[in-house]
Length: 114
Image 1: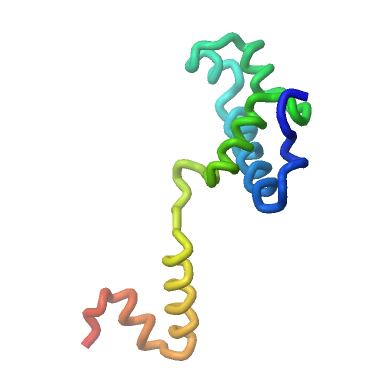
Image 2 (image 1 turned 120 degrees about the vertical axis):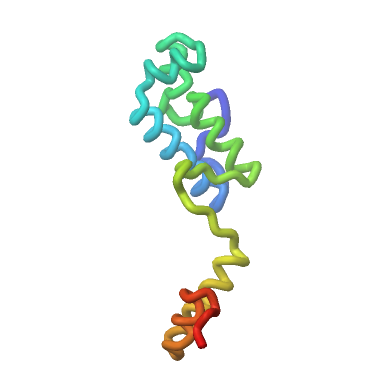
């Protein structure tokens, strides 16, 4: 074993690392291992070793784990990020709007409702 496999990480780290690894593998499949290898300047066999899905062996799994330990969650480029404070503010606004249809009008009109 070259490094601690994802399954051996603790709770939240394990879930983040697993999701990071899933995203990396999916994007690698979408773009193509050969294409990625050519662009980054490695052989296709080196790319295959990087991708090795045997737990505790592949560098891609190691990278996913390192990112998780550093507090990084990988996402799609087009994903919209919302931090926890914004999430809480939106949840409060939505709860309030259920009881006040005028509140929704104010939010979506930019406050221009008279």
